[in-house]
Length: 352
Image (tube, rainbow, N blue to C red; front, side, top):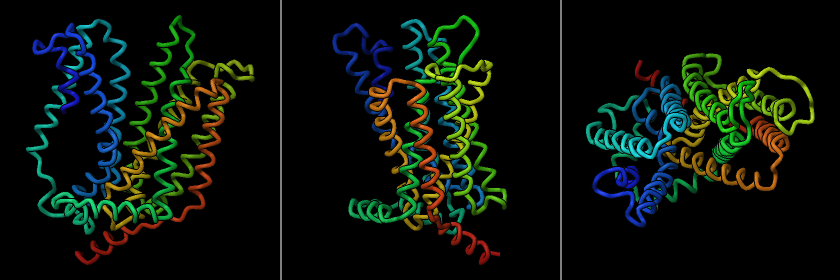
């Protein structure tokens, strides 16, 4: 909220945009938004564990994450309609109004429901209602670092998501129309964001309601990983501008590859959040989300640095595909435990 306020100030009569140094205020607001980002990204699984029963948690997590991806799609659409300086100011004011609404809404919504929705929800609710001591936080981090599944899951998902965001800056959806490269890039980003949202929102009900996937989340992750690796390798060899294969491919094929890859990436993320919470139970759910958000930022930074040295689009995409295949192998040999689900199902039987 403070960051949005600082960014919007030059667009109000309170602070003229012509005052020297006013741009630094906008930058400070943007930095504050960036600092808060990882903390916000760590909360979806916590919210679903606090407010929803065990057979609806994955659906809630996927909807929260999917909403964030829809917001990213709006961000990619805005540059197409925001062209004047006054439009930029109005956009920042609109963002401030949205943040103000969310900030005020936090005081109207209780921190947790009056009755825990599941047998394990009391752990996260206790963490929300009690003052967290630094010593306990440090102990929780030490415990999660000892988990043989949580750390690789967060590392694999975070690095992959970070590389995926960087990969999108290289690829574009080809078009036979007379459009600029920037236009093709925006179309690619919009398709990607919408696909991420689609995959994230769709996977939740599938793993919640289908008995086939009730305890086979790892198999779902491996399958999504394999599909993504094949698609990105195909993009590198057939569609990239540096491709050595001279094959005529219809325009829609590039859009389809980006869309399906985005769906697979989006579907992975809610599963990883929930699976980390399962395997690290009874540690607080938010801990796994913090790890995913951290490694996502690290993966993006590494991939941006890699682009400086690997400027060939085909080679970078092939490296990304190889990285995805390697993570699939790691997931395949990983042993996961559904500790939280075991407790919730046992509590459900006791209630019945």
